[in-house]
Image 1 (tube, rainbow, N blue to C red):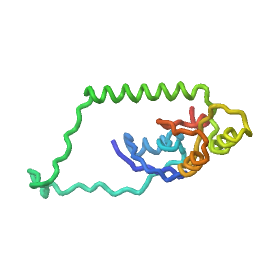
Image 2: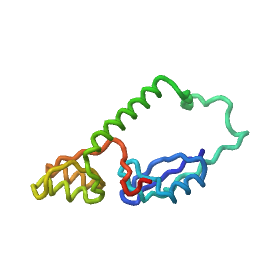
Image 3: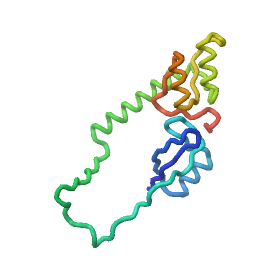
Image 4: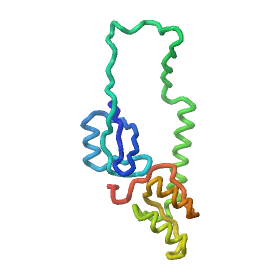
Length: 160
């Protein structure tokens, strides 16, 4: 497994992603399978990250230094907490899917359409799309009823 810091071009969000290999990353990027989990932007690339350089084997102390924090113990897979978390995320995903069933994807036109509905220039309907954080704050300041989705949404044109 290999971990990369990725960054979306639209908003500059940096997030971590795990891949089986560098080739897996390239394959997924080529196929358009990468998306920012924060804003859904499909323009994602590798971000600068510090190299992981291991200390020499003979320079590590066998026992922790006094006052040094001990590394956290790995959590075994399949614990009750993990099962609860998976169930919670699954329920959240199903709830979001149900909400989006009657919603129309408007992509980057979200802010314009939300404002048009708010000011009565367009019929009110359920929509979802992309909006920059600063624009979302501006919509809220204007009194436009918007809310972020808890999970990222892959734009319809990016699906297979």
